[in-house]
Length: 390
Length: 135
Image (cartoon, rainbow over all chains, first blue to last red; front, top):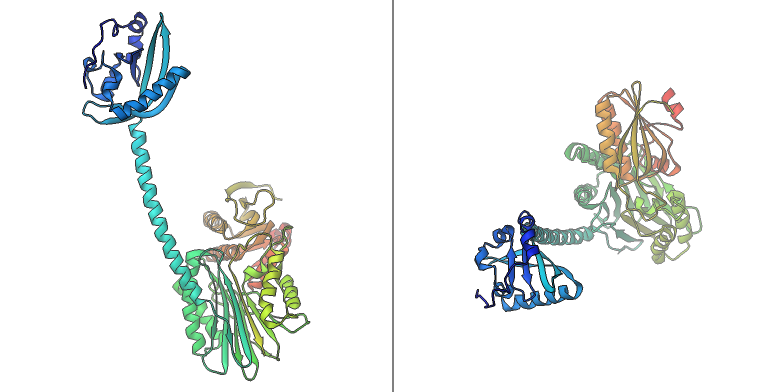
C-alpha cells in the first residue's frame, strides 16, 4: 500500500467526529470515516481488529490503496451510488493486513457538515455466515450427489421390477394381457404368468401394503417364493399357508401385509381353480352379463397365523370368449370429485360394459372407465391382468 | 360421548391425495374411561399418514394397558391397505396385552376394504359407540 500525498487539512478530524469517537469505539462493527476525497479520517478499534491494519497505516490513506484495481472499480461504483442516494448497503470484502480478504456487509452513508462531505462506512463481519453458507453449500452438494445416486439406484430397481411385469402372452385357446403402473418409481404390486407345461397356466396378482422401496423388496421376495411354488404345482392353500408363515416368521414386525389372487387354468379342459387372500374379487365376465365375482376366502397374509381357509379353492368351468379380470385395489379404491369410492360394484359395472368390446380392447376399456371415475392421477399402484379364453 | 380425559395424540400431515375438500388430514385423540381407551380418528387413513396412526395407537395401547380398546371410525371416510395394516397392528398389540380391540362407526368404503381383506370377522365391529361400550 502506498501513501497518497495530501495536505494536512485534508485529514484533519472535524470537531463532530472528535465528539463521536467515544461512541464509535464501543460499536461491535468496524467504522471508517472518510472525507470527500475518500481519505480515511478515522477507523475504530473494531475495524483495526477486523483488518489487522494498524491505525497509523489507515489514517490519511486513500481508501483505494487498500484494494486491487478491480476491487476498487466495484467500490467506486458503490460509492457513486451512495453519493446519489445518500446511502448504500452491499456485500463485499474488507482488506486484511496479510493481503487476505474478510467478507463483510458494507453500509455507507454520506454526511454533509460545515460545507464538507463525509462518508460514514460500517463493516459488519459476516465471515461466520459465509463459512456456514459454504458448509451448507458443500453439504447440499453432497446431498445432491447422494440423491442422484439414490435416484439412479431407484431407476435400476424400477427396471428390475418392471422386468417382473408379465408381457402379453397368447396360447391356442387363451391369451393374457397385463397392465402395471406403480404410483412411485417402484411399488408393492406385481403380477405373474407362469406356464410350467403346455397344458396349464398359473396367474397371480399380488399387492404388498404400502408403496416404495420396502414394499418393492417384499414384493420381490414374494415374487420369488410364489414363482417357485407355482412351478412346483403346489396347491394354492398350501402356497398361501407357506407365504403367511414366511411373512409372519421371516419379516415379522415390518407391518407389511400381502393380498393376492391366484388362478390355475387347464388350457385344454378350460377349467380354472381360483383362490384369493384378502384380495378384491376377481371377475369372470361374459359378454353382456353381470360379471361373476370370485371372492377371496382367506384373509390378508402376514397378519394372523390362521389366515388361510381350507375351503379357499373355487373351481370354475370356463367357456369360449370368457374373460377373467384380476386386479389390485388401485383399481377399486379410486375416488371421484364427490369423494365416492368406485369400489367393487363400480368396477364390476365397468367390466360388464367393457366385456362387450373385442378382447384386445377390453383392458384399455376397463382402465379408461376407472380413469373416468377417478379425480386426479392414481394414488396407489395399479395392476390389471385380463385373460381371454378363446 | 363419554366425558373423560381427552388427549390429543397427533395431527398428522396433509395427505397426498388427488381429491381434497378442506383440510385433508387425519387427527387422532384418545379418551380414557374406566378401563377403556377410546381412540377418535378423523380424516382419511392412508399410506401417507398410517405410520403416525400406527405409532400413536400402539404407544397409547402399551401405555394405558386398558382392558378394552375402542376405535371410533365414524369420522373416517376411507382406509387403505396401509391403514388396515395399522388396525391389525393395534389388534395384535391388544391381544398380546389381553385386551379387546373394538371398532365402531365404519363408513361404507372402510367396511368394504375390511370386508375384502376378510378381516371384518377378525375385529369386533359395532355401529355406534353406545353399542361398543355396552359390549
